[in-house]
Length: 111
Length: 114
Image (cartoon, rainbow over all chains, first blue to last red; front, side):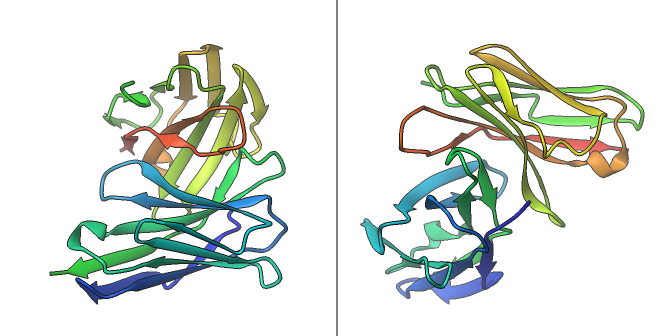
């Protein structure tokens, strides 16, 4: 079953702009992860945030988590054409290892 | 390490035929996952293994699907008989034990059933 729901479904911006994607989920989690998928490729892990964390940074990525609202956001700052991809949030099932993925946000960054 | 290896990368078969997808996880990873991705349903977890033992197969759509992991370096996902609605991209992923929970995905197998 899919628990994470990303918003928006598609996002188009220009290079240099910031891109924000949101994820909402339904039940309690231990952690939430964000993945990127380039066209025709497998998913690549970007960042994990635990339920007791509120914000996390990795390079140009900033992730926030609000467990009271059951939502997370991924911010990509100073976007580049190479950031063009689909972005997925994934919430864990009970064990922490099995993940539920949303349908993703398709990001297009134009030069 | 070469990463997660899947074969074949593309498979075209006729309805009713048996299809076998293969996966070699990253050496040392204790968890192996099979996913299916379609436009309509997104990415669905089919089954996952821990130390070669199936832990949760509740995502397997029906009895036509079966998965095995005979050893730590090899897993198969079999569909018999295949149907057009099985057309999708099938991903294998592996993960080490511990608290990182990060999954490493293979390149996927694009299956087309005509």
